[in-house]
Image 1 (cartoon, rainbow, N blue to C red):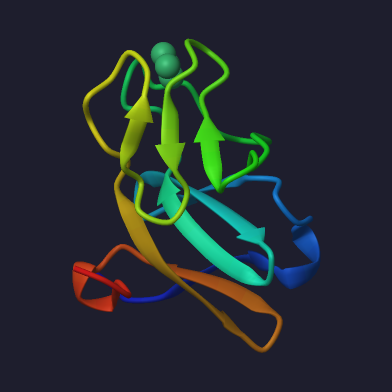
Image 2: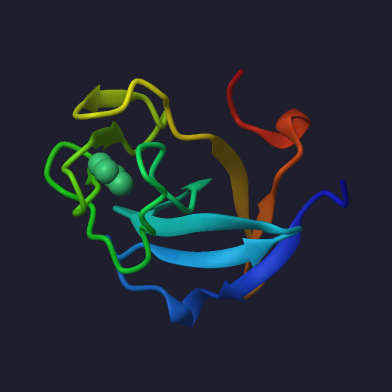
Length: 111
Ligand code: FES
């Protein structure tokens, strides 16, 4: 596991619009919202629908537009919908103009 890898430039993001990038063979969703970056699984845990270009909803909720599963942006927890499986969450940071993601759980900001 290589630690943090660059996925995009800061200028590639608009507030609240999720983008999905390949990282070490996984698709990872990255979004900036109200000054903070978040990274989580790039696909829904229900039937694998991509979160690319999903918009962060009020109260920091990610909604899968396929069958309307609701997830908490900050923790990946399922809030409602046809899945019981939370989204994996990953560490994300900004280094100069690079947005970087790490799949290593030791880099995550919370347990
Ligand atoms: S694929 Fe996301 S709710 Fe069904």
